[in-house]
Amino acid sequence: MFVPRVRVRPAGGLWMSDSGDESWKERGVALRVFFYIFGTHLFAGFIWLLFYVGEHAQK
Image (tube, rainbow, N blue to C red; front, top):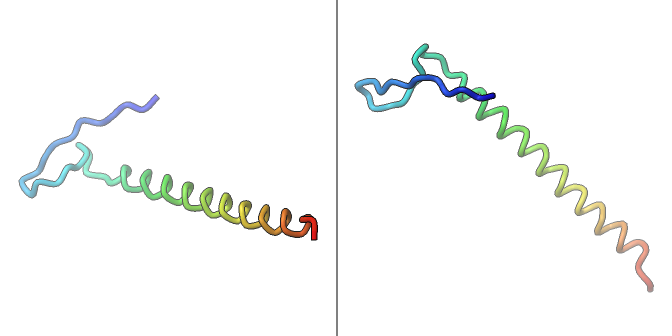
């Protein structure tokens, strides 16, 4: 279960976690990489399907 950390707003106006680490950025990058890889494979599968259907089309 995800439990959000207590956040404090420094004088610069940027939100940071209480410990000062940037684990939220690492989580964001990992999520973005997952979706990019998943999306690329989905697109490649669609292209493969187009070639497969085109190869078996009545001519």
